[in-house]
Amino acid sequence: MRIKVEDIEKMARLARLSFTDEEKQNLASHLDTIVSYVEKLDELDTTDVQPTYHVLDMQNVLRDDVVEPSLHPDEVLRNAPNKKNGYFSVPKVIG
Image (cartoon, rainbow, N blue to C red):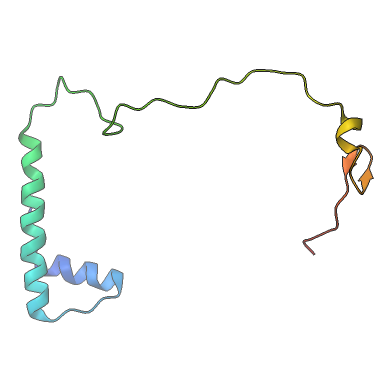
């Protein structure tokens, strides 16, 4: 894939950037080199390679959920300054 000055001009316009003609030439050259280098990856045979989702072999470190008895609603609301219909009652914050 060749990166042309026209491509740089289009990206610059979309990003609302301005470059001199010399900067456009340099960017086109540098980006073309980068893309050419990345295209070399297409030459690799990856048929037996598992997809990598993370560079480290990680596992979830959270504990399993265990159902345990919880507090009775009356006990939870016992120290609430304001309660209404079995729920905490708080001042209205959003108009």
